[in-house]
Length: 152
Image 1 (cartoon, rainbow, N blue to C red):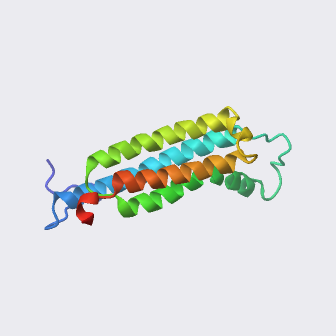
Image 2 (image 1 turned 180 degrees about the vertical axis):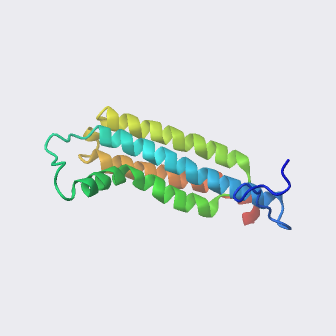
């Protein structure tokens, strides 16, 4: 084992704080990267279902328009990661179940986008799917990530 590992490979220690803080940091980092990966995957799935036959690729603002269209399904993950990072604790079981909820929500939303099932919901299907995802993710974070034992 190296006595002085190169820059960036050192294990950051939290002297005096303890393993609970280390686990909290790991849970926060894991949730951040999970939200990023799932948001990008759902954004790609959503953009792949749009019709670009009328889109002017050579125009000046075409890349910005594409990014704005890709941003719509990412909104639930952005709101969820901001909220879940505030309420996550060092306990693993809540994070594991919340991960299952996030993955299941991503699969369901991807199915709605790809199968065009969301077009028939409330007239504005994409916004309905986004709103339902936000509600489910926030409720799941409140129920699964908040440490109810310390709230007495």
